[in-house]
Image (cartoon, rainbow, N blue to C red; front, side, top):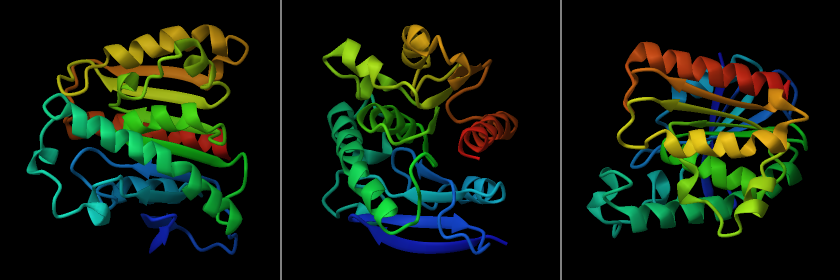
Length: 235
């Protein structure tokens, strides 16, 4: 049975799931939840990663979970399109705070260079794109139901250059009306040349007929792909 630990690093509330096997520094995945959710939302997925020998660390995004201020407007429960300014601010501030969290994980010996990944769902997937473009320390990444449009830089060429060599898997839903798949699909087309020497490190999966709130079978497929990808590039 995996251990579950709550912690706070760099001002970020964490939920850490891992098996106690004597090894302090395990291959580590940061996991970011969706809009209006919190770090406990994907506990099942964290346990799935821990069962593969990884340390899964869920974070509370800015203005979510234990970081949610009483003054935050109620519209956080709405869609990104309905609350674009708030959504963009939350994504940007969460991305900006991640490097210090990674610094502390390394300083405390909870993770080692070359064995760190990040994964996220919906808003968390948007954060994944921003995080790996801003910090070269992620060996692998999975963006589930996310869009890069919320974090795209004005310097498009430099922004695209920043992704390689992180092993990036994007999983979208073909019938997603909340976070349409077009932006992620387009990003992968633009990245293809940059990964031409290592094409195995770039993959795009679009689940036919699936909506944003996937049925259980599609979700199992998506998270299964994610777990396999993260294990492959961290182990």
